[in-house]
Length: 586
Ligand SMILES: NC(=O)c1ccc[n+]([C@@H]2O[C@H](COP(=O)([O-])OP(=O)(O)OC[C@H]3O[C@@H](n4cnc5c(N)ncnc54)[C@H](O)[C@@H]3O)[C@@H](O)[C@H]2O)c1
Ligand SMILES: O=C(O)[C@H](O)COP(=O)(O)O
View 1: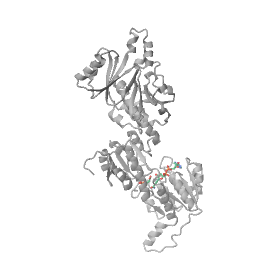
View 2: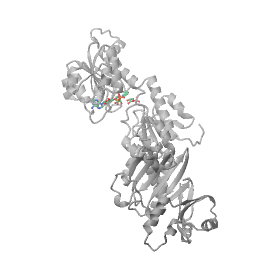
View 3: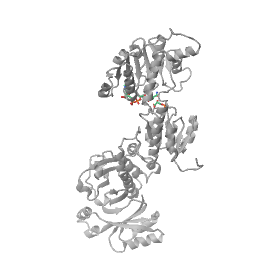
View 4: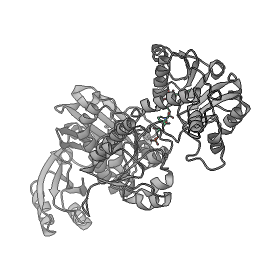
């Protein structure tokens, strides 16, 4: 590895299969640092762009807040209960997992534990190794013809059900969210109450996440409803069973055996209920090995490493737990518009909001999609791009950290309301295949979220805050700015002058910029949009100013090679015939 590299850095503090890590090594700096203490991890995390973990690393709020560069936490496995997903979302950090890479291994481990428990394999093996020959002590039970009851008929639960059917077991399940058709196709009888499930089973296995409704789900009362001599399994999460109650039921002999892979605290503290459960002679236990097979580890590692690469390259992840799902083909179509909408937001803030005292006086917007773009339903990336664009010029930290993960939260906290509208009326987007228009609603209407495309109604045209743009391939074009038609690329530093369209204006502006040593790269002019010219002249009837003055207003956009000091824009605005001058950087 070179001593210094500009590659994004990935921290891997747990053992992950090299198959996935190898995919990242050519474009990312991958640092495998096992056995870091929590404090050491906290010290080094600010350097990293991505963090890859299994279930041991506690990715808590303190760690996430310290991780200033972090863009993604990847969990090489299913459960994300060791990651503070809520905090990650707030900070705009994507959390991805591998939802199916280890299902089969977890299901096979469940079956392995069930058979080991039914035939006393661990205890009889230990006894034999101890030099004993205790055949009558270790008489087991067959599973064929017995009832296996499953709580949680998701990916692992369903795979366990299918394997158990192959062993000749009767299988029933409780899962309020399971599909009846899927259950029927696996010959699993869905039951509607926990009591019905508990009273019917010989073996009980749980395959739910640890959530409010499953925490402590099987405690003393539930165990006592089970038949005497039944057996239980937990290869899901510690905490779904009450460990004290399970230990008591084993000790009383009501429960004949417990097979447990996961514990409330891992590794369990000495003398804790989990530690005493582990020590019980009729407990078959493993140290969270459900996903620990070569195959599962390859699968999950490749899965999350590919996602980390994609995210750090700016694509959307396939299985993020805190990002809305967007089809890849839709995302591809949206990408140039994501750049465009961010520019619209940034141009809005620089041109309108920051020039009116540095605050966002108007915070309710219509974002109108017209043409082909209107047929894309999932426009979350555009919404996020708008919030990012609006905030970037006024808050470097907040603006830069806004993304599809936290845009809604940031908008809510900032009091920004956006009504996205999909307009399929072809006449409204003229010659462009797609058009995006950002309209700020006047403060008096800011509480309304009802669609409103009539921007020329009660708002005086002078004050209209409206920007439109389009994309042709990767090229972005602003087609309207306020009451002017426009045609310029939103790129680099631009000087925007509103002026009366009379000879000599270009010369005046050019000489003031030349005096400051500022080069002009390009220049375009835009007239008042016809609708506005007519509307404005009608509005101004009866006012002392002659109509033709308004009809000749125009917009001058100059691409310049550096930022303009404020005294220059002030000087420009003092020139006769120049109405206003602002510089923006896009
Ligand atoms: N021991 C291991 O190494 C290991 C390996 C893989 C998965 N797991 C764990 O196994 C569990 C299941 O994983 P999965 O991939 O099948 O998840 P999944 O999301 O596919 O399935 C979970 C199922 O639980 C159901 N459920 C949720 N709340 C319920 C409730 N109150 N009552 C009944 N059913 C409920 C859901 O409807 C869903 O069908 C997770 O906790 C996961 O972390 C452990
Ligand atoms: O949720 C999971 O995927 C399993 O619990 C596996 O956890 P592990 O990656 O720490 O083995």
